[in-house]
Amino acid sequence: MLSHLKTIFGVRESENALFMPAQLALCAVLLEAAHADGTFGDPERGLIRREAAARFGLDEAATEDLLAEAERRREESPDLFLFAREINAAFTLNDKLSLIETLWRIIYSDGVLNPY
Image 1 (tube, rainbow, N blue to C red):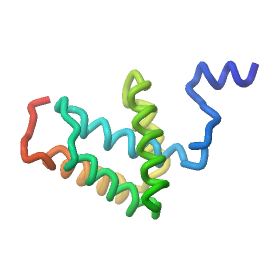
Image 2 (cartoon, rainbow, N blue to C red; image 1 turned 30 degrees about the horizontal axis):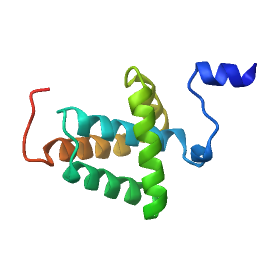
Image 3 (tube, rainbow, N blue to C red; image 1 turned 180 degrees about the vertical axis):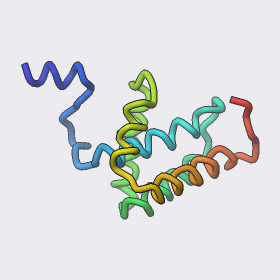
């Protein structure tokens, strides 16, 4: 019964349980911004990888695992509300301001501002 409820609400027990929900949420939002214009290239990928590693003190392998899990969750999510709620609850105002700056760096990383 408990496992069925976890499935309904999107809670997964996996090897990626070592990442905090706020870490996954932040990376999912960064990935969503990178995908917003329909392309996801090396500039965006590298910037997100560096940001996640620096912000959370992760090595290369852990960063790749975090981003893979965040990407999976981003693709499965019907919207960004759960991610935004997690970020709002877990991060300080300064962290959120830093996130906004990072989002704009990702958006402009390919040198093009897409109207979407």
